[in-house]
Length: 458
Image 1 (cartoon, rainbow, N blue to C red):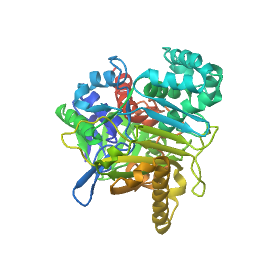
Image 2: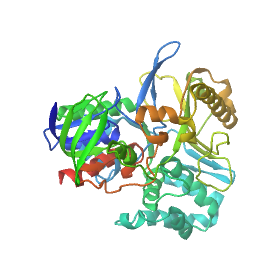
Image 3: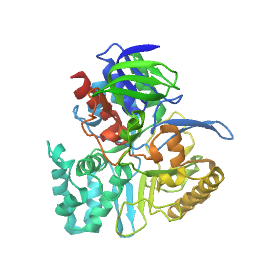
Image 4: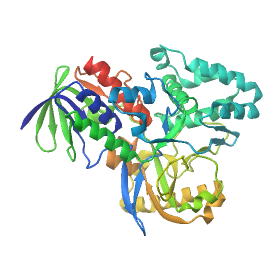
């Protein structure tokens, strides 16, 4: 059966849903195809049964930036204006405590109050505070997208700061949230994530499920259609245009515009083209649920970014090597009618191809080993947690990410190469999400919007 649509979107993750909502405001037939039975992609959810109740888990750390931003042309303001939703509907809650960046060379603290980071830099390196203030102004320049997208972030940072220690500490969270390739990233991505974390404020939704359902409801009310459990088998091109989309059901779809959120290389595979610039930067995450006794532990960090060496280098370890990278997510200022069991998330970054090549027995043993490894690391950092009452523990690996998102090697930040314009070599095929540069929850939502606006609607 052949179906004709205005726009077809591959993947019902955050970028796919935001693109769907935006396009369905202007077009009659917008369809999203999702290979799984729920939405979300890299930012999804799942339910596990514990001793006393069904528990909802958010996959990923799910810190959201841009909390303080009121500008209608940036961050949350841009998203709400374009999608026709309100900030209140997103149910975002600010960080409860300051967050910590820690390495063998020292530590810094930051919060939604910018003075927290400035005071922290001043106490660690008095000579660096003027560099930091000047750098903040530098990152706020307009119209630098083309220039900065082609610059090595380290070259720019070393031209702006005199202290390598301050450069390294400030860069740890940026790379933990956006390090899409080894050693360095472009300065455009660096500057966006830097501003988002340190200037725009951090928060978290009470549940990523609620955000996804809000977007799906909006999409449906606009007349959009989501087809779950529907994979795309191949894209058929003629000259510079995709002329047919073949689904796993054997159906053929013809679309004026196709927006792919599955990644550049994953989209190339659908075209039977060779992949290139493949990343293997992935992560292993453990979630530990506690009863409310955790509130008595005295922990005062909402986020903790740890690097256990002195000089920061972004290269993924192999399985047999000890990982130097740890990121932890703790407490936000949620306002639930009844306090649910609290979840602490700790992850370590990994070379995804190592995990994908493990045999099943080895995979189970390695997963158990890394779960214990991360729990012990957590207790070394926060010994008071040892006495807190654990309710449930769960973990997922790069192999899990690959299975549920189809990202090659379980790569969480996409390809080493990006299409910042969203354009491909085909006139009606566009990239949204990670590989357009839309990193994180806010980045993914904005990516779906701006690619729809500039490449389809306009």
